[in-house]
Amino acid sequence: MTTYVAVIERDIDTGYFVGYVPNFPGAHSQAETQDELYANLREVIELLLEDGEPTLEAEFVGTQLIAIA
Image (cartoon, rainbow, N blue to C red):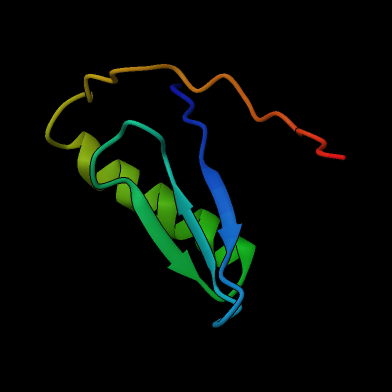
């Protein structure tokens, strides 16, 4: 089993959740709920993997909260 990290954001104007897998071309989707987005991203990744494993150019490490005074 292979796992991928997805970045999830919520569009302020539409309220939709938007997700993408960093450095995985084409691995992105949007949905009204996080559960729907998870299912959409899973489906997109599975479809993309039919063409073979992607060559990722970097590895997602994490996020960092930066405080500005």
